[in-house]
Figure (cartoon, one colour):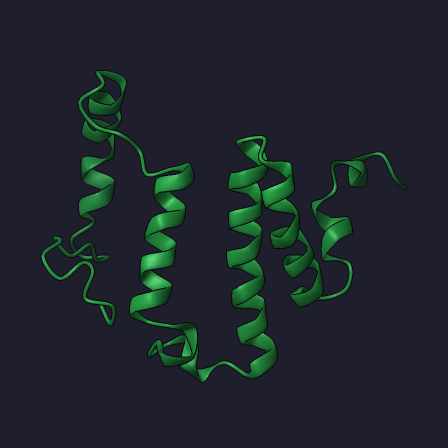
Length: 121
């Protein structure tokens, strides 16, 4: 990858779907306490390392996006961080990420994420 963070990792492709083959084994290892899924704070640390190693504007794929589209990438990062902090009940720390998400997202995104959307006609 462009970041180099996964240089030693096995390659997963359509012709060699390693992740799919290993998923049942990995799940059992997690259930047994031998492995952990990458979630929460650890996931956010990985995302931060990826952004630092390859910023979106320098990423070979994302560099093709317009400035507005790159803002959506940042909105996604902000929402992910908000969700992690909010889940950890760190509401005050989460709020700036929510505000960033709202500012960078297309109109109507907040409504689309609201659980109330199921109650409204």
